[in-house]
Image (cartoon, rainbow, N blue to C red):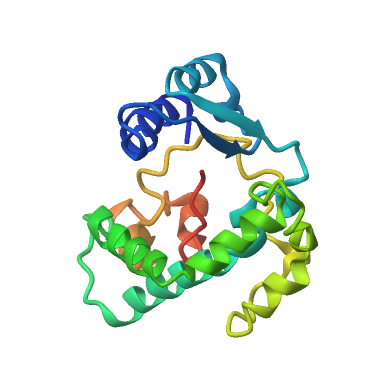
Length: 215
């Protein structure tokens, strides 16, 4: 995600929630630079949106989806990818690499897995982080009660609230992922095609598991 993509997201996705801009909204963002540049802030102001920026190193405690949803969700996406790798007949590139899954395939995985997320868990995660609670104090007991959220994740043993989806270096680079999922399948043939020299470099050792996407 970069500045240009963030502006597109605001116009295409965020605005679709409230196309007439007649109600004020709150958008919680981490401190990734693409979220807090002036052009993005100005665009959100035009869309009648207040911005709450989570300080660095606080995502694991103050970002609702990181607290309860993201880590287990990404694990499940990786499982879909691994199943796709194991049970699908793959087309190859001229360099003898497995072609990555199509955007529509990955979008289908994301849609199906997101539909399975417990909506009540999402609501509780916002309350736990103090983003959405009753002003009369009746829900103050839910604030930062991570144990209560964990109790709703008994079937997701991979989730660890103390090791949430808060990756300090997640947004340090805006990489080009055009060929990230291409996987070398026959280094020997690749060497033959290059006169015995393996020009794949580190790509030949690329992990075959789907890397987590950048926000």
